[in-house]
Image 1 (spheres, rainbow, N blue to C red):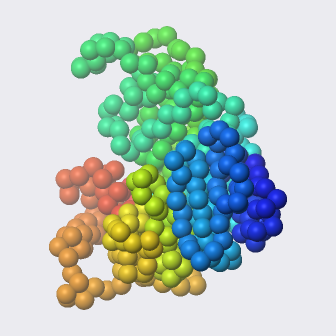
Image 2: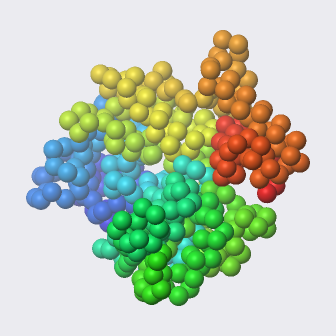
Image 3: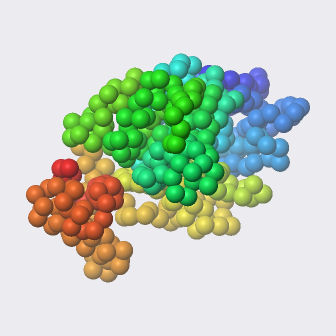
Length: 420
């Protein structure tokens, strides 16, 4: 758990804010041990994490010169912004930050899982923080001193993925001018993250299953198995049981990985996380020598009303844009919040309907995307819903077609998935 220490003067002067923070940080480890001090307290020795609290007529979050030290001035201890700013200052770079009850529950489970050696499967839409959660598990595990290696299975060429994972001998194939140990051996003793594992070819899935079961890999061009000690965390942005049912993912590999599944929900379903994430992103993208613009309550309310089809990646875009627009000012206001797409209220049923652009709001990119979607859907329909046949007719790979369909869904378009 996060150790949050504070002086007696903090307990007296800042109790409402500190008690709210303790209720969250006491549930899960989000950062290193930190000291909260009042502005009248003496500075502690050493470079440890320390946050100075000052309640007055000013809202401000400022880095001090020493690493891990901040000054937080706030007006209202009950405000969303004050708590969000404090949580952002407490969070370690690269670690998850959360305040929503469901996210805190997932992080508490992840913290317990970290102490074990069982495989973990993390499901969630693109941009929800699956790799960040994986790194959190590694950092809180007995393997934290060993390597953490993340591999995006969709970003690797299919023909090279086996060599990249398991290694190869010199001369094993054309262009192999030297041997390579592969990601499994590079992660020996540590953690290997296999992101977007649903994109892995079926033939390679069988070899991955053997590596997991036997704890050994056979490099391409070799006949000698090499023992490895690796914890595997797999992530998927598609529903793997559906992929298994449709023959695109091996059932035995799925059950091998699915020992303890974790699910990350879209950002729109985790409204409590938006404010602390926004402040953390503002801290990340503000130069160290400059004060961090405060995010007003009205701006935070705007952020909570948005549908976030791009999840945390879209939020990062919005915050970077707001920092640029608010350049030279102390506060980010609603006027500085510009979304990637027009803001959309989230109705009770959770279904987000894309707004219809007017003639003056049309952009060339929108026209191109709509034309591409229409061409793909018409080809899919002409091929009886077969993705393989449609991809062949369109001159693209089936993987590219699946990406296109997924991007259309994320943009709010109603598209059918087709069949293999």
